[in-house]
Length: 154
Image (cartoon, rainbow, N blue to C red):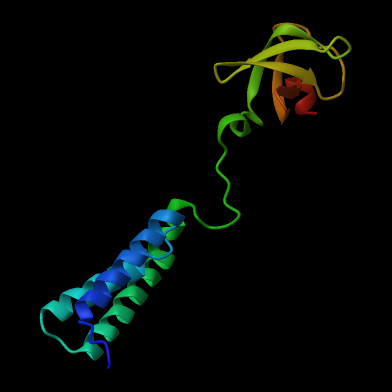
């Protein structure tokens, strides 16, 4: 005995599987196949042949995936190697003002940059007086590593 399964049930189950996989991965990996399955489901309900449904599913999925890779992906920074500075990264290279003298021996000192106050240390382990303009070279843990603005331009 052969189990007879209507094609629309197959397409509906496939659509659900792709949507669940997409919801779990949230990486835009299977949404194209879900759209292709939806088109095939609609074609089945319209009385089209299984061959046309399969072809439509493959073509629609392929077109949507290709459009995403060529047109959309470059604009949403999903490409590997792209880096948008966020949080502390955006401070690197910015100018700041020493608001508490930087003393590397005692481990004290603070700067204000981009409206934020940061504990700071000098790059060359030299003290830096208050009200001195500095440039942030890097962030180490919770400390901004700075150099004087004049030293940075030498």
